[in-house]
Image (tube, rainbow, N blue to C red; front, top):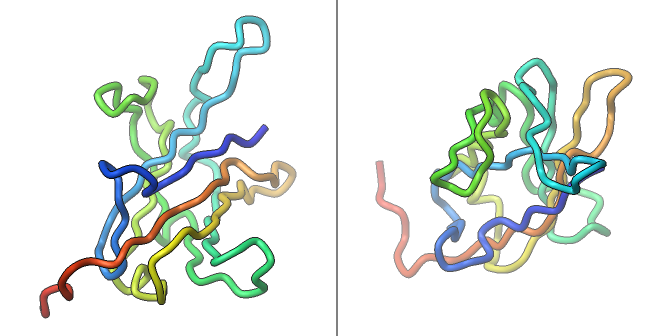
Length: 140
């Protein structure tokens, strides 16, 4: 079962248009007996794809990332409110060239699919808020 994760929604986790940012998404499952969350296990051998759109009805994705091309794996970090576990977190690197594709501040939608043959399905979904900055990013 897919779990909803909203990204960039609170003041402490904003995602700005034009910035390089890595967001974390830990795939957890609810224990059928206790209802407690537990890690899905080491997910580093799985393949994933993330798509971001302005709305679910949009035909064209604004940003598409995949394992090895923007999506890597990390360990659960309890200091970030995650459950401990090796390779249980998707690290989603949004490059400035990706976030610049967002043309206006606002709420967007995304989903993350597991794309391994025989295991295809939504792993996570939710909203992501992209915010305009006060100044332009520095020229490099």
